[in-house]
Image (cartoon, rainbow, N blue to C red; front, side, top):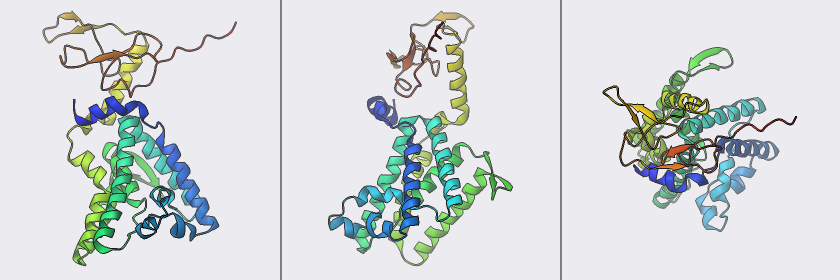
Length: 292
């Protein structure tokens, strides 16, 4: 069991479900504040290390509501877009892993600002830009062929927009290095560290691909339809009876003798799960009987 599985097993129950709904509310709040007073965020809310050291500790949190858009139409479209891609990531990975991805991005952005301040004695306003970049790149990696209408007219696949984002980020890094601002380049890399960590340092992310998620959902649908038997067929075509079977992935003790299984007390029925899915599955509830 890898490190992420251990974390999920221990802390998965504390994950914030539908996290992007709350993030979208923060983005909408930032837009409203910016419409009322365009300077309020910069003066009192943004992550400014100088002001933070002077006692304005709320800035470590309030920078989250950075205004993303100036126009109401683009604000509505943009907030909905971020909500859509964030929800898709949560559906693919589960609430805990998406929480970990998003919050690690926040922490790395704060770290980038702090490191740059310690070196250059200047606070750089990274804001939420690189957090949103990391979330979008993660979505494009999982769903590269998803098509959207650019400017409501031009159909384009997400992966091509991701290529443009990567090109833009590459140009930012090149300009920073070419001008000798190595610590700005370093700060950008740190700010995107959650994407780099999850998708270039791990070989496990394919387990959370859309095809794998679809397969698990189909299996779960079969389980709910009554196909709950623990008969499995081995490689020789012989049926064997297993004692344990995960209701999500279908693995049994025959797949891995080190697998652990638990019944969920919140599901209606005897549903058993492996430890990878015990804290991340959707609880099975029987429909309420209608009153006669």
